[in-house]
Length: 195
Image 1: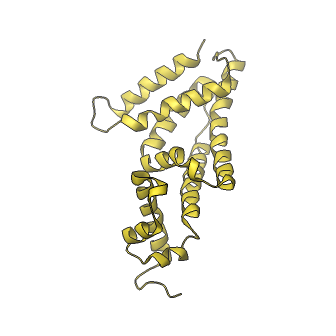
Image 2: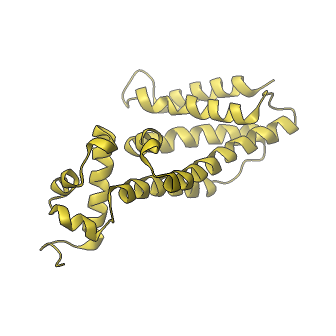
Image 3: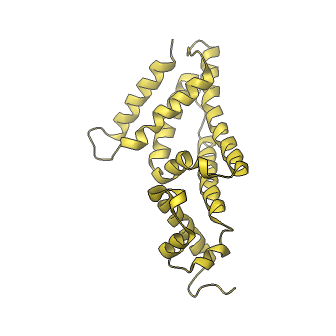
């Protein structure tokens, strides 16, 4: 099949993913058709299949790319000397990384139900790897008496849920600066896990 005139794989592929990301975040995965994505990009619907086998593959790729980027960016951070400093770093990283990617975050949490079981398993494993990073910080802190939590897994999920709340309400130029918001959340997280 001939490529649409003016179409370039290194340009059109990313444009398709960008359009799908925005449309899925705005309307929900189930409500968006491949035809809508094609129209948004300015290509014929059939041309999309040169770049992705189907809509499910597109959703999976968006989620996988987001999780891989999250994990690789976090892994590049220099590890602090103490568990308390590591927790502080995690809080700041999580807030700032996710605030820059609201559509990715929305899809990563709200569209999991639309993944096939196999794709769900792979994305869930990546999410678990990120959660495990935080849980290890909490375990390290417990070992040295810096933290006191009844269940590190539950505390991990509670902290991430609290941090994710920032994405729903924070707006640049609002009453508090991002630095102030991060400090308030750090104080709340610290108090929730310290003895």
